[in-house]
Picture 1 (cartoon, rainbow, N blue to C red):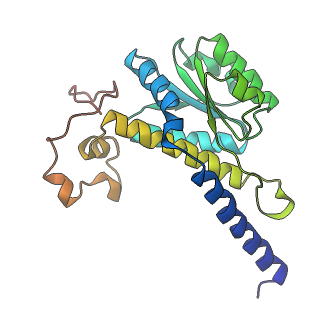
Picture 2: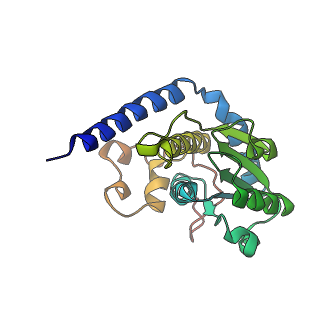
Length: 225
């Protein structure tokens, strides 16, 4: 049997998620993502690349989002949040775009990474819950991902803020995927494993009729991946 305190904590957390995420989503507008989309598309069209980084829990968000961006038509590379200032900025080339995530926008380790990223000639897309933060001011484009409370005991561990960051970046991935015109055929070529690696029946008849997306990434036969 669960102790009543456990039940109450879980109920309070779920209510917090419902309240915070609904408020966050209802305040969002599709137009908010256009500057970030344009910055990334312009960089890709010049042959530059997309990277993503964060410290702590946002660092884990970064690895997930690098995979999601890459599998939906926009190759993205994870930049380790602290190793960046110990040599990993070597993966950057001037003109690249780096998405930097920090709920507070004031994390000391990320400040050092952002400064190194900019010193290497890259553009920064900041993702934070605080529009007046250091990260917001230092970013070329800023995306808001903020909540009023984290939920859970102590209201400290990143929970709701992580969900807001993920939703913000998922929305950006949707915008980029749509902008690229990513087709089912292209998706399964880059994601051949599992159930998602098979074309659906209604997609099989449409293969070859859609305009290919423009990712700059080609397979060994020259077809865009």
